[in-house]
Image 1 (cartoon, helix red, strand yellow):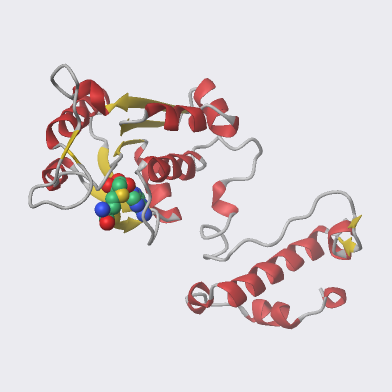
Image 2: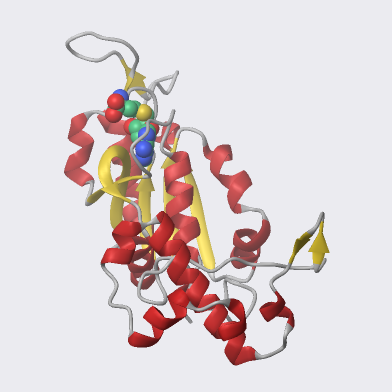
Length: 247
Ligand code: SAH
């Protein structure tokens, strides 16, 4: 059975365990589809005070994570998860996307080291395979990025999502890289805003066409870069122009 095993290395384990224990990821851990071990980097720091950071050489503001504790934490994680790729969270990294999340799920294991403060000593990179970023902004630490990677990857493990639908049908991954169509649930009318009649029709082929049209439209409007990479079929081009009663 496919499962995902992850080691997260952090100075603040509780930031991770809280998130991972709830809802879908919590259930995935209970059912054994996901196993995340959150290791405290400070356990690998030496001395009475177990110091894991120090002032930067050359001066400047803030503290830098020392190389020894983080590298020792990576090495310990490697013994628990042989063959796992080592990720380091960093705003300089490759942007996390659905393709990378899918890769991690397929590999079935990953080690993710979280930076803090001004960042980590450059020599930590000697044990890192991939630096991964959440986007072009700066966080106070890598925990959110590590959690985002685990969360997005876990959704690809069969059985993690409650229903038969798979992560393959969602924004970016299915339908050749389209954004997803809008969703509605009850009530059918709320503050004068009505659920599109098509979705109430019970006509599944029409509903499929409506969803495809909406996905095409929302992608064209919000992500012209994604839309430009598509090769829409003749039917897609017709759908884009179709009114609801022509679907
Ligand atoms: N001084 C650094 C920022 C350090 S932020 C700089 O200017 O680039 C502290 C830590 O938070 C980083 O080491 C990294 O692990 C994490 N972090 C911050 N922003 C991030 C992002 N966009 N993606 C992933 N990790 C990030």
